[in-house]
Length: 308
Image 1: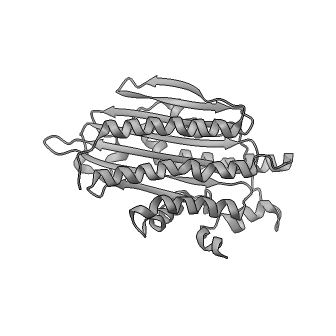
Image 2 (image 1 turned 30 degrees about the vertical axis):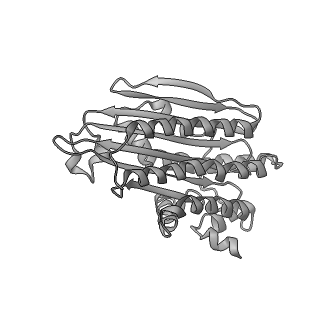
Image 3 (image 1 turned 45 degrees about the vertical axis):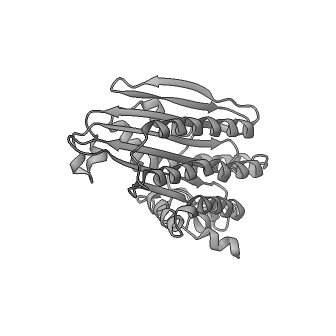
């Protein structure tokens, strides 16, 4: 049954999601705390950034809530919606990136978001988006299979084909064209989601949002005490460069935030604290470093892998 969009319900869910994720991640870290930075946007709206720095497990992490609004849709949002040009709009979401110290713990990213615009004389137009993806430096089959099983379970109540659709979309989206390689081992990505049933669409966003921590926390617990060398650390810093390249060149959220006059500190909190680039680097053939790109970053079907 179709419903009118309930903007306040979405906002309260997102604030609760931010709080619960920070609580779980802080517990997994054991020592670090998420500091809170509330901010206002002069053009309308604001948000709350929760940031952890130099914890025991997490070198840097940010879990950001924002609710921003404006009188005219930014260019990045009207390219394929010309009928909304000039319409007042609201956007809200939770977006996070977690960069661990240990190279054997993957970086993770997640976001869920809601957008609504009301053209003059027309009904509100809304859509949901979001997902999550995993970026290992040293891969483990078990981690990848677990990640994708949780992702599939989040999607299954909403349609048998949804996981595969969102998994393919994630693989296509988080792809560095100039490197001709995926950013990580994928997960879920969806955008412009509106079936005409607000209740169902909102439920899908909640299912994806709630499942992120169930996908990530067990991987953190399994890998956070793995011994590592300086060579492992240097490879992690090198591979973090790919993360920076993607976020500054391709990421829709980053581009939308900068184009709409968003808060730069919050938009760029996804970037790692330390990173290195090395000219024309190639890992030793047959090494674990080479296996990252030769085996893990190949867009494979991890659920089929789990049956083998």
